[in-house]
Length: 323
Ligand SMILES: C[S@@+](CC[C@H](N)C(=O)[O-])C[C@H]1O[C@@H](n2cnc3c(N)ncnc32)[C@H](O)[C@@H]1O
Image (tube, rainbow, N blue to C red; front, side, top):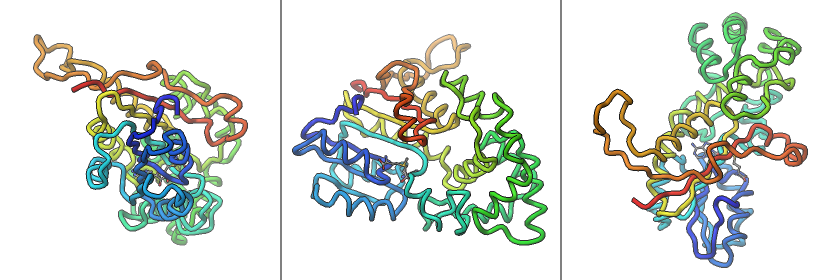
């Protein structure tokens, strides 16, 4: 909220409206007439939040749109140019609690994991069809899972006996392949160390985590094409901001934080030609200035104590420069 500093009369875009918590805070801060365009790929989130924010009337406009199309949504709803864009990535607590979505490894429901259940393929399709090699790569690349091969092999073996259709079924297979204690007792491996290096904060992987955590993260990233959509959305966000407008991104794992960090680093620089180029041929102008320095903002200990899901959050913000 400090970075966005939404003012009365301003146009804000919450690209990940979710349960509407951030949108509500923005609406309050931008009283009496600031407006919010809230987007979410998940139709249920739009429906639920529409009811929650009904009292704000036309100060809030909600659309079931993937944030990679935020520019088109902003144009269609008259939110251009925008004063602020917020992306709070990943999944919401609501989605985790909805047992028919497959996001939680405690869920007995179908292993789906799509934010928008009307497009793409469910995670169960990937689990049923990818061979051992591709499953290994998926868990390694998107989950930074050190036991990717072992888990992939266990999945391929298990699915010859019975189809793997539910989230708890998959979690049990992973748990049997990689028992709880091994993961917890190997600090500094995989994503934990990478995260610690890139953000300079204590690695979440040093705490005990369920063995299926990284596998579920990898599947969710693949199913929703998260790492492909994010760079496109960042580009669109810069395009819709007015000079002086602010982009705020909250990420929850090192893969997406790395994309945000690199994007902001490129956009704050002038020339992006390779170092060996004798003269500048790119003509690139800086479009952003960092807000709050180059290190991400991390949650305080108090926040983590009251909201443990915030523990891996990293917030980065930047201000749009004049064209
Ligand atoms: C961490 S939650 C946001 C919570 C929200 N800030 C709040 O205050 O309740 C992330 C939300 O982003 C949505 N989401 C994830 N990827 C998306 C995308 N590419 N386009 C639009 N929404 C997306 C998810 O469906 C989820 O509802």
